[in-house]
Length: 136
Ligand code: GTP
Ligand code: MG
Image (cartoon, rainbow, N blue to C red; front, side, top):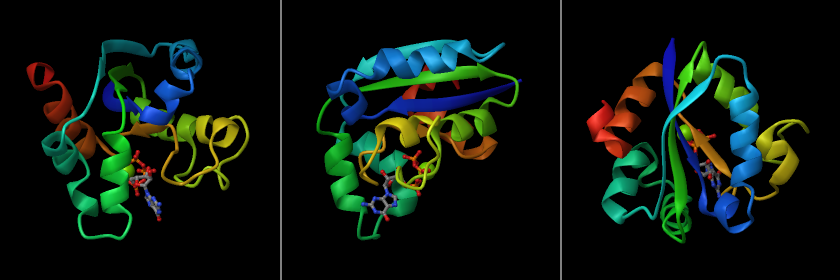
């Protein structure tokens, strides 16, 4: 099976939606949360995590937003969990995300789109190393 790195972003924590989002993940058959921590991300961690977007116009406000309050960082394990969590989250722009997806149900703003989930096996391995180095 696969592992993926999930972040419930500061907007999800501030709005009290973490329980709701975690419930959706837990209900998927066979998926398990194997690490979970509430933490405020520092600049260095965010630069590593979102390095691919450095130089893009949305990068600076994205990092500022991601450091604006605690996130819930998780490792989720299970069958096809990388693709599955991207599907559960919905597209980056919440207005383009279908109702029923996390972003489609709760989001409006592209930046404040509630959840991050690794987009490939390669990203997952890289991101788990950043957030849970002991579990890499
Ligand atoms: P993550 O799971 O957070 O990585 O989202 P993603 O994979 O759906 O999107 P991507 O990696 O392309 O972008 C990372 C994050 O930057 C997004 O989740 C948004 O919060 C933000 N972002 C991406 N594109 C834009 C954009 O065009 N405008 C703004 N304001 N924010 C963006
Ligand atoms: Mg991404």
